[in-house]
Image 1 (cartoon, helix red, strand yellow):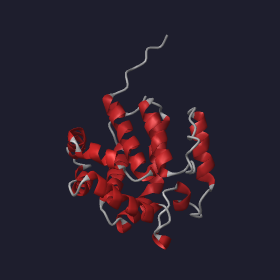
Image 2 (cartoon, one colour; image 1 turned 90 degrees about the horizontal axis):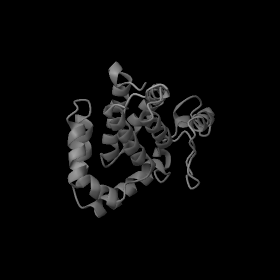
Image 3 (cartoon, rainbow, N blue to C red; image 1 turned 30 degrees about the vertical axis):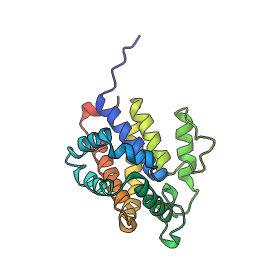
Image 4 (cartoon, rainbow, N blue to C red; image 1 turned 45 degrees about the horizontal axis):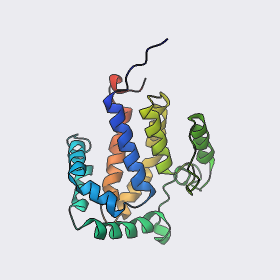
Length: 207
């Protein structure tokens, strides 16, 4: 029997970060989620992230938003911003968080949908029945990456490279239209995390 090497803590931490970023681009944070981020554990986690030089500026932008107002009021403001940026209420300024909208013909429901769906099946994963987003939604791709990372699956590197290939234009657009600074910070954090994932040390790679 082949012995299995333990999954490095760095891999688990990355998986947690991918999940958190996926949640941010899937739906606006609830008062409970914001309260957790503003609480002791949330502050400690953000402080740990900010200790990484590549993440410091991004976390600073997120901190600036979280430090203003109570969770309920902040959730209301962020929900309005999210709906305008990502759900069509912003008219022509609405940004689609789907890969198809940023590659090739830049039309929705193109090849990336079937490609990611195939990757999900190959990973024995399925979208929840109540999920109305296409398979190439940023949140779905990040959750897939988190699963691959946490499973020490060598396909994680290709998935990270795929995300790094199509997200730059989307993240730049997010920073240009975000009126709150919250998703601008998340965009900077995702960009830095993907870059770091692709250039991490050999001992940190999934095996």
